Image 1: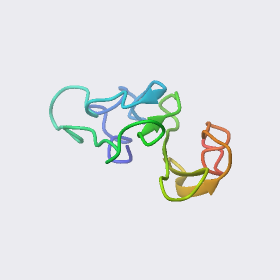
Image 2: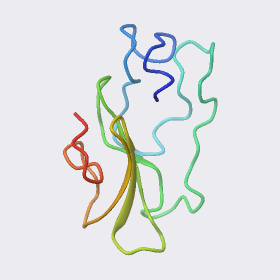
Image 3: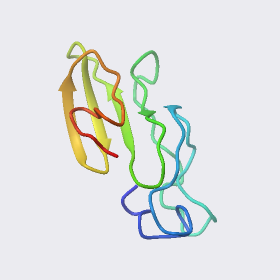
Image 4: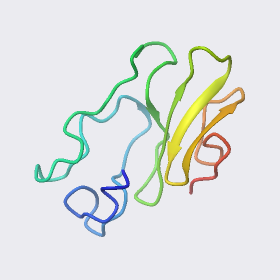
Length: 105
């Protein structure tokens, strides 16, 4: 996502983050025009079932929040966003106002 921020071939023409929709595994790749391909195939969670999937909070070109629920620690989420990477124990799931403790928008 950070590599795409300043490249109009990857995200919107004004060179922000790629726009995404909410949901698990909603992107196959991050790229607009096929060259360069920043992420040719999008990774999936090794378990990739139930709440152990990489999920997006619906957003726009100004921010992003990607998260997954950890398997070994109850009610603990791992989040990656435009504000960094954090984990947080709470009922979740993360939102744009609470992406593991970060307000990302």
